[in-house]
Length: 397
Image 1 (cartoon, rainbow, N blue to C red):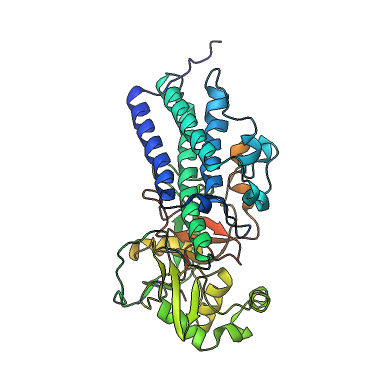
Image 2 (image 1 turned 60 degrees about the vertical axis):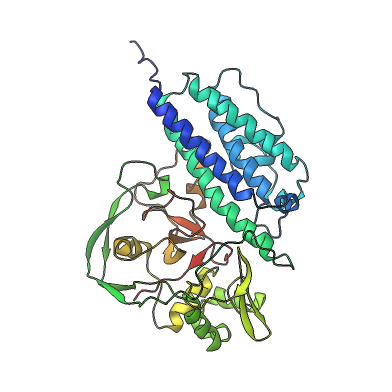
């Protein structure tokens, strides 16, 4: 029995893939352009990776999963980089533990930019060589979306690094609309019934979005607007951080252990609330959506308001009826697999499935999300105590 001949990617698709590849790769470099060389190597906490590590890790993905197995006679840039830039892929081998990424004074920033240039040139050669198979297109698309995920992490980590520098340096100076008028918020009503959630469109999605399925929802209402800094400040001034009644037990332990009093980057200076932004330390914009809060804080605020956080199913069903994309929005849903979820074979199977424990789902996108990397079925996820991401609150009841 004859085997089917290998189907190669057509030339027009190759041109489009190459343009998309270079555009996305260049955006990572653009994010880092305002940095000083010292900014590239700082790791203040375990959750924040040094910017140069992000640049190396995203490059390693293309070298390890595309070039090495598929480009004839490909020579790796440096055999030690698999150990340095592997993140969590047990299938691929040993790696530097996450807490030690800040100890990597070598390879230098210059070395990592040479690495990016080398791999980009090799990817260009590979795509133009006629060796690109159609079966590799989903893996390449995964690599590009993986880089876009790290672009958001990169910007978020840069903000944490600079926002914990005692000088509060600005990442870059941009005009921003101060004193934005607060939009009128209303509760949008949805009736009980059977709905469908999950990805079903054409194009890319992550595996955790697959398995479109039916869910039964009771009547619910969801807010048309995100909670603002002004509203959250009212919670703080009502001693919300001092009243255990609003908090999960674990959340109340977190408050006491961390002496929590406000969202991340808020500073009370001379009786005035200031907020560190990418433009530097500024007076708190009361009409802006509250940002950088964890699940405990979001849940406590909702309880104080006599409401709750929406489930991810409620959020997805309602998302066509309000504006979203300014903040990642905490939901009251645990990060679990959809019905019929299956892990892919090999290292790619480690991408999402093994994290489906002890984390909560966030929906939407944020101002740090790169263009073209958001959809209303996207399932972001973080542990309940984390607040360095661009996270906010939308209420339901």
